[in-house]
Amino acid sequence: MATSAICVSSHSKLLLATRSNGKQSSHERVNAVPIVWPSPLRALTSTQLISGQTRQWHEQLGQKLCRGMDIASKSTGVRCEGAQEPGVTAAEGEFPRAPILLPEGPWKQIPGGVTAAKGYRAAGMYAAVRAGKKRDLALVVSDTDAVSAGSFTLNVVAAAPVEYCREVLAANDTARAVLINAGQANAATGVAGRQDADESAEALAKILGIPASAVLLESTGVIGRRIKKDALVAALPKLVERLDTSPASAEAAAIAITTTDLVSKSAALETKVGNTTIHVGGMCKGSGMIHPNMATMLGVVTTDAAVTPAVWREMTLKAVKASFNQITVDGDTSTNDTVIALANGAAGGPTITDASSEEGIQLQGALTALCQALAKSIAWDGEGATVLIEVQVTGARTEAEAATVAKSVVGSSLTKAAVYGRDPNWGRIACAAGYAGVTFNPEQLNIRLGHFELMDKGQPIEFDRAGASGYLKAAGDEHGTVIIQISIGDGPGASTAWGCDLSYDYVKINAEYTT
Image 1: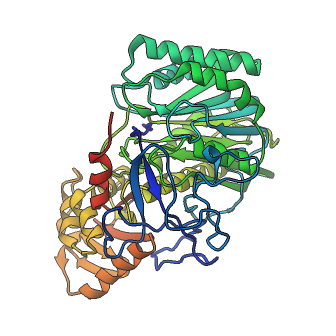
Image 2: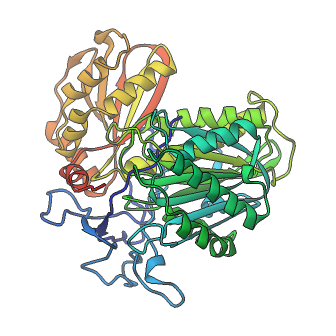
Image 3: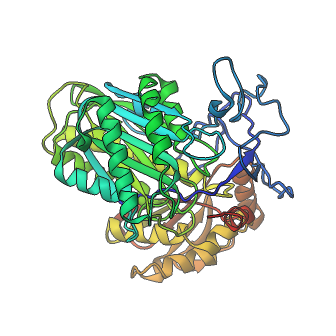
């Protein structure tokens, strides 16, 4: 896959967060997947209330602040970054979390993120690597050697940490630590940028007492800026001291890697692989510059399953292909996209040596599900987004062809704008399916929006336009999910892609972006 590091502005967002009244928000969905909303965001732009939107942000240079509510209010149950508690600085207050969109399957959702699996610790802190007093340095460590895998951006202008990780993974089967900074992408920084990456890894390795080759790196921030290496290295001893197995430490790390994100993004699950109970957890970041293959995103996935290096790398690439490579926000592929996956075997049980074995299939399913949950949280939090769009394609000759059509539709600017405008415009959907580069019989094209049939056998049909528009509006009002189902034939190929609508706010955010 191609992951990406998000290009962040020195502008940070001012957001007002509210929590629903303790109930899960529900949607009418085809093949419904339970959706848990830990903290659904409601907002509007700083200059106007956009009808049907309840999601508010305002960009302001400097630090992210809260307005219009008591940030420590017990009635809302949500605290914005900057809220102070005893022993917690304003720079390290709580941050809203993304909904956990875990697919249904033989697993259960658990707390913990990257520390849910046995043998992992994490930490996140403010290290003065970026402005705004927001956490900007994260670390994930395995207590023992962990089989490692990575998937990286396909952007030719790859960042220094991407090149570093590619080389390290090519020469080593295992790793112990992943260090992530936010603020500077360290991309297009030449030899000096690569030296910064190497020296950062060496400094951390010395503190941890491990080889530098056991340290992997990720960076996110403004392209063309080197990392603030002196500040980063100076903060490493304190960062290592904070390493812990607690869910709070995992969340601190998830917050530290965010940039233009409005929410932190993490998830974890527990399942059985053979007779062994294993755990898979992860965190990611991304909001803009999101497009396969991967997009402005960083991710770290951890498991305590035992698996050989070759099989784990095969599984990771397959999971990324079905998740992070199936999301798009704006069609831009970042220079820093990276997903690192670690498997330390701490759960015990036989080592998986065959991806096609029963145990291999079970681990692959859990890994893919976890990655899809993380990927969907990125699309949900797309810059300026008011809904998550899920495009399901069936009837293709192959899964690859179905994936191509799904990505074409979910990435269509006209389709995305129509969803934002609450317009059930089937023509834009059909058009995007048609130019995807996949040959199919247009007389077999069927399109459904939610439970509204818009096209049957290539012909538009009469439908309740007001009802379909209401479906889109209802999803926007609760920042929910819009389901678009497309059938292009009677073949076995099926795939799903995720994205978000295209609003005025996306243009505003990126027009005000500064390098």
